[in-house]
Image 1 (cartoon, rainbow, N blue to C red):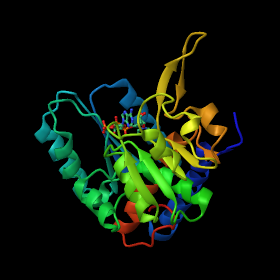
Image 2 (tube, helix red, strand yellow):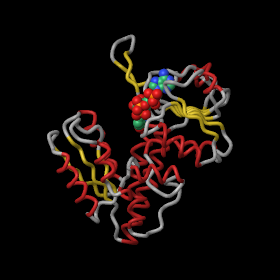
Image 3 (tube, rainbow, N blue to C red):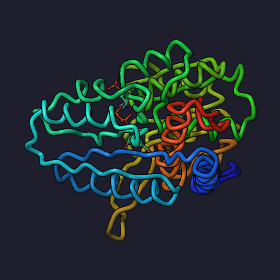
Image 4 (cartoon, protein in one colour):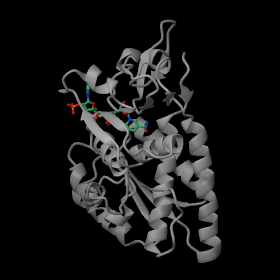
Length: 298
Ligand code: NAP
């Protein structure tokens, strides 16, 4: 354990959800609009079922409408595309989320790109990827959006800071890098082929680790006072039996050097669903040309 300030994602997410619930209430009272999120779940993957249940619960708690579409793992791609088409046309649905992964016989990219970009609350549609890259208004992927909110809250301005994102996935690493660039950080994206990763990480004021390798980043890679955002979720065995969750950074050695750090669990994770609610609210406001609450998107 060290001196680093703990960035409490759980508490931040709770505050964000109550702000969203208040804005949803006002939208109902003033404009008779109820933001609606349609979740599409294909098959019986246990982890996906848990995620979807949590999303439904939190959507309802925020006062939004939740529409669940549970489909058999053997559904044909064309039938899934027609469901997306129906949801695109449904004016009660402002956000559409297709829970990934999809079964192998379905082309996930084709499904995601069939979602109306303005209802694409996951921000994975190629149009939204382009909007983010171009610095235009769009839907921003939830996990990096949550990281950005916590970084802005902690630092105030991110302008001019040196940021290193470890990981280049389409759902975390790449959009995270674009968001940091949008806030005028000097951004480096590192990945499995990066040479001298320690030296690259050591110069960063902000490190976002999104790798999926338990406790990969040790404290001696970290510049004194840096801010660490740990996206990783890894389950490891405990010496006494059972398992526990850890991130991609080695919490004990890193928190001795860092200025601030997100814990795992209780850091980035809770922000992801809160940002899904934020995106659904933003989408509902935009669809109805109502002014959107500030601070809910990039
Ligand atoms: P991913 O698609 O597997 O991408 C991992 C990235 O890490 C890849 O770009 C890979 O590089 C890079 N990498 C792998 N080994 C490396 C190494 N030794 N050194 C440097 N880079 C390395 O994973 P993801 O979907 O982005 O997720 C990353 C982690 O975040 C996972 O633990 C996941 O569970 C977690 N996650 C958490 C949330 C949340 O809500 N908290 C949301 C999403 C993901 P290459 O591209 O070269 O292979």
